[in-house]
Image (tube, rainbow over all chains, first blue to last red; front, side, top):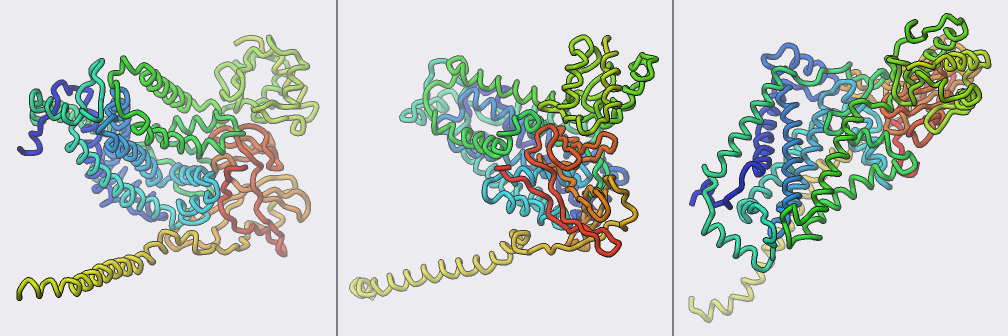
Length: 444
Length: 174
């Protein structure tokens, strides 16, 4: 029987399309990646110029970059949903343990491809993101500094850095991906796809294979066309969506040139790493250095251990409420961190403008002087006054309603857990002016 | 050749097979090892090659006012010809008094992002996760686990020189 017509369990409907959609995205990434490599110059000094050429001058270059960018995003979304579906329906249980393990490796390789791809966007964001990555590797016990040096190709950013990222992104990680995709697909064919879970239908490693074979003989339907049409339609829609996004939204704009001496950069990762970036801002500093290593290590370990811990028994989500609850928690946690990352309330608002007369709403000269100092001394970077200022600290539009003059003075002079002590920075006159300004803040 | 002859030759064949197995494995290992040396050298070159430490001039003495903190840029110790603009480094240089200078790394000790000197506020601030440092480099707020790293700096005749240094990598116990 031709492979394409191999029998699959009946009832494998739309929830089964995400694995093949990931594969469609991978093929799209390979094709657009090869096309980009014809235009891109993987040299620390020339890459930025070639990116400008691709974006502004090359025929359909901007769309090509856009497809590759949105293709990466779609691949990460699809592989995540696929993994979640497999977990919720316990499709990782016998005899598909190794399919799950190879899938976990492919998931992390996909994330690694996304991140190294972001570094190849060799602008100021790419340069500083690579430093952030090196700092994270630096937290590995004993070999951290060596790992950071290996990533950057030296002890600073330089000529070797981009060559390394190019090699990771174009040769090394894809080779691992091809290897494990082949293995993953081989296992899918050999063990068959999991049948839709049924309440009370337990997986028993002793009898499962015989039962599955019998079930396929009795009820199996040919993969092509009776099951595969959904994969093809969903895959095609995914790719069409990617292309439309590339045309109408386009790739991320390039930031400044890749100059490590230009310090006005504000490095931030692409959306799929934003949740982790947020976590770094919110974690208690005392445990953070440990968690940067322990967190990902533990996650990988748990995911790899999963099919060994539980490879038989119930598969239906209704009989596995903790698995569903855990999945919902992970989704809520990651999505909340993502939304927080979009706002980045912990970052100083360097672009804050001096307070407007409308927001100062006072003719008292000391209050006005205080408002000027509130901006100049950086208070406005972290505190909001009406519609101006940062979000790092509490909003102070009506601070006079909740703090006395003494409380304000103590907090400004001594600082707090997340605020510098201004005692050694402000003169008495400046302190009095700022307090006078804050005392006049009574209306939101 | 009859069956008896075959049996007689069997130990000899076995010896020959054993030799050929060892030879094929040995040659495979040898060729892999020889080919692997330059490959491993390319991979681990950043650990093998030592980067020199050089003094780079960042300006004349009189261009820095006492009490001010300025951004200075200089070239890395060992820039390759194809490095372009990536061979540059930056530091924040303060003239404390007379001939006394302090040079701070521009990398936040949290995750390496570029810290900015806010002159009016007398604070270094990091855009990534809100790390803040006092003017002496000590941590004022936010997640940085330790003070800003300082680079060696000297006055050589009338020139201010900074010693090229690695990007400061914070380790797990910081």
